Length: 238
Image (cartoon, rainbow, N blue to C red; front, side, top):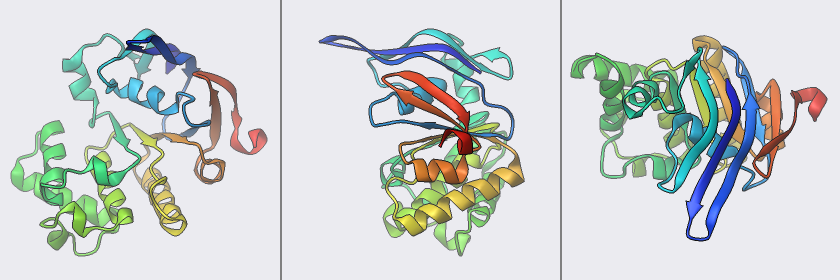
């Protein structure tokens, strides 16, 4: 539950109000789309929920609750247990989200070791299981490879595997198909939806593409200049 959220960036030129009184509810197992033009505050809303804003960004006021627990001002120690574990995020560009100097396996295992009590052997088994789940062929072999050896679509599958490895309750998708061509976009969206049916997590889907939103979201919230200006069921709203 996000209520009256205000997020600003404090620059040399003054305060920039990126999110200006945003409120919405996201229920278990539902898919809510946040749509709007570039610069309307969609991604900043998602980053505010995760509290991963850039250095000058700050949540000024408002409430973000997960299962009734307040996250704003909860502190970094609490947020470390929430990020990846309870709420995960898939970013826009899979190339910049993955570290080019580490193998895929190491990066997947790092996320699992950080957020669960599994040992290295168990983390490796879970990483291979997740790669299979997102339809990456020959997962044992792929674990030893580096991001540059994967196509854009395959890298995004790795990011989905990483985000879901710890069974989060909420998955934030920040325009996860923007960097992909249309066919791969469709495959990625189908994959996210099929995994959601299997694992029953809620999705907050940020996009500026109405066709993509129509294909995945049951409800939409339209953002403009940091505010939500319209909400409703996807079919009715479109």
